Image 1 (cartoon, one colour):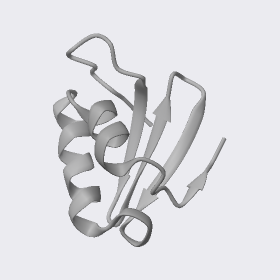
Image 2 (tube, helix red, strand yellow; image 1 turned 90 degrees about the vertical axis):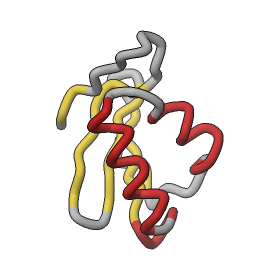
Image 3 (cartoon, helix red, strand yellow; image 1 turned 120 degrees about the horizontal axis):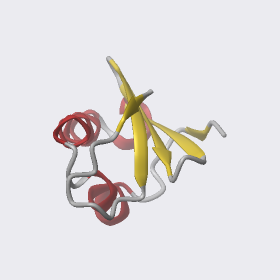
Image 4 (cartoon, rainbow, N blue to C red; image 1 turned 120 degrees about the vertical axis):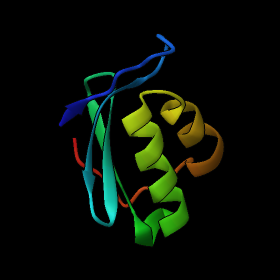
Length: 75
């Protein structure tokens, strides 16, 4: 997984892994959740990918917009 830059300094996201139709997000070096086109929609996943690469805003976006629209909890 790619470490999340956390440019704002207070994110719950610690790492992510981008695939063509999904993104896996690790929270606090603990739980990993898989978000897919099927579970959250293509537009949402593509926005999450942009935020992950930018290192800013991903945790807030997930908590405000995506919520529980993950496909599965990996760990």
